[in-house]
Length: 105
Length: 113
Image (tube, chains in turn orange, purple):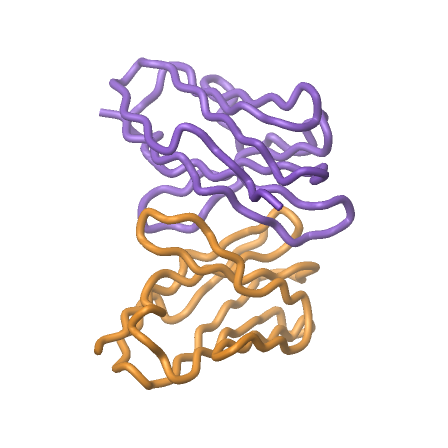
């Protein structure tokens, strides 16, 4: 079945630094969605991006369908960006284990 | 527009007890999903419905878990005889017909002692 690899598993940044989060799928995709989750919190949709590049504020998502990968770029990180970032692919959303991001002041 | 709502938000049980979770999807969304998210892991699909029909329940532990959506709107997920391994957050999501983008509710955090 479909498997999803997210990297890095965890990341610690100083405020103001940029981050690049990766999501790789073992088989072809027909859907891609990025989420943000605080500890104990729900999933907040950041991007629905099945292909191409989308930007929202300091966040940019790029999905390359042919290469079965997607990335999330966070620029000028802030302490409030701390949390877990999850990617999910296919209609029934196969999720990776997430990237735990900590932004230090 | 109201988002996906779930109740209860928290549940604490002893092993062997039963529990039900309730989900109200976004109005007009025909597809409803239930996920289980163990601590420090990504969510895993349990079951999903289109209207009142079960489309895929292959990951639902059928001996103790059941899910219904009788009128194609609200849904209930039930665990009979809970085990410690069921400790997780149970998430409900919904999507609009023909669209893959999913919207999640706040989840129910279950602890089985």
